[in-house]
Image 1 (tube, one colour):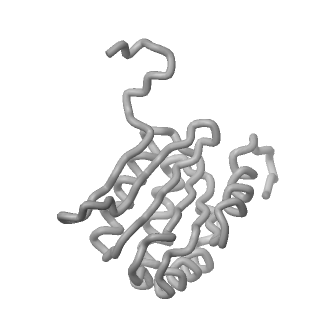
Image 2 (spheres, rainbow, N blue to C red):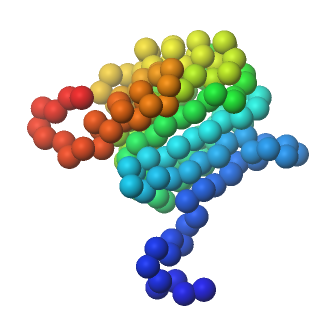
Length: 158
């Protein structure tokens, strides 16, 4: 393989995280270089250990691909993440910001409990660390994220 060819990337633009013996991935991570967007698609039931393994993959991908934005699609995910909200807000969010991510948009999980956890997360996350917001449609989320990928001037706020 010619690694000097235009368009060659030493890391693929899609990664998969599997849990146990599942046939379907727990998490699919894909990078959209034109918008610096890391798109996450969760599926199936998740527990604390699975979410934390997924988070480690997200941090690695954000660094490897130099992503600036995350669109976290929980539409096919199940589970109650309420107990994880403090960890997500106060431990993971600062790590995600340190990896270069400027903003995170969420699409709600399939479960009511998961959706409530995402509401809690976006409301309780520490201000000024990492902008996070929950949306009902992907189009709304992408529009909001675009503002965070524009060149930023002093005092800028979307």
